[in-house]
Image (cartoon, rainbow, N blue to C red):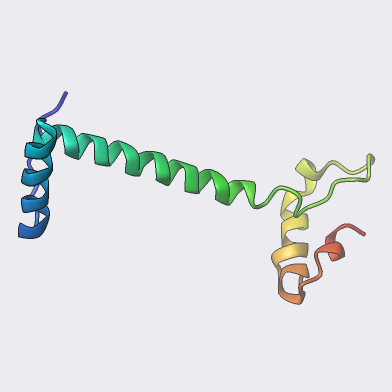
Length: 94
């Protein structure tokens, strides 16, 4: 474990002191718990951003390998006048 010094605003420090006393634990333990929870929420949010792309692009033509043409496909969807701007998701599946 690494020792770290942090500067906290007075209100956060008072909260941390009260919370530690109420739980019978250290201020460091509460800070570690809060950082762990923040890290989990951040990782979950990042994962949901990637998941939002699933189903946006279609690769139904077996003769076409989307991985080989990913730049063209993204340009078709997100580029100037693409389906993203026009609201037509089906424009990329033709």
